[in-house]
Image (cartoon, rainbow, N blue to C red; front, top):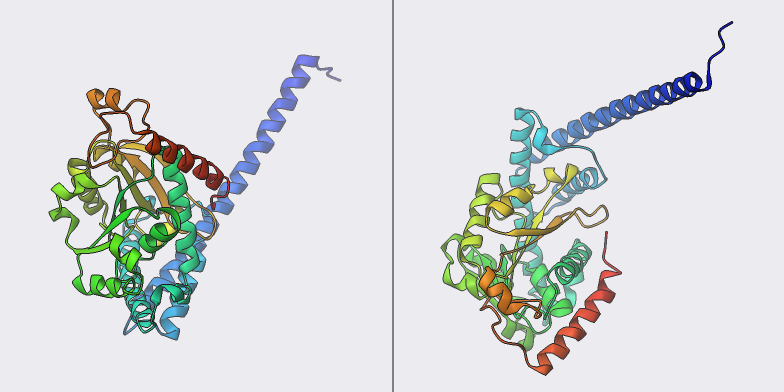
Length: 355
């Protein structure tokens, strides 16, 4: 009979615990891989069915397939879409473009429907995903307030606003009631549709401009914005997104903030995934990357164009340099009081951010 010393016994117990942990990890890894394979198989089947549709315009069949797709992609998943096999990467790229086309048609349909009312803004809840935009706008605004503190932005650009610019409408009405918004879209028809939605609200219409332009052709005007929002479907391929971000980094003003919508996990089958390193290479400091796990589908990246050292000293103590020019002098007392009040409201709002 072999009698082990205390040290040997302790070592044996540690080895047994490590072996048990290894087995558990192996089992969990196998389970994750099986779950990933099943999920990718399901999404591939839905993608094939969607690709066979004669039209992506809203209809019971179209709506059912996209509802199944979104429902499959929303739950938390360990899928890394960037590591898929080449044929699955091609499927994913094609699916994202199908989603983009279907989303444009869905928004155009509801924009036309809303335009039939005397005041379209009173009926935005008719859009089936309106609650998602409420939560996403609340999340983005809260993250901005936390990571880019200071007076609220005075001028905002939204790139890729579309025929139903719910993000801009929600931000303008609920979070930035004094800001002017320039909404950019390459489609003139989309802007015409969007313009109709604010016709009955003179005050909001005065703060909402709709510009038909490719952001790649916008240069000098970009220096006039405190914040630029980049829609998820602007630049669907990684290299396209990188070119857009680089262009923004070249022409936005120092101190201006950039909000980029991305995706994470299986949600990367619905929207492009943006690598924060691409944002840095585009000339920005990445301040936050947030991956929601609830109803909000898009991830959010908060970035800021660095302020040169000479300007950084000039804005020290102010906390925020508006994009239309670095703040070179101390703001007046009224501005300071407004900034403090705004910051206090944001601290309260941050406690209730959606996940």
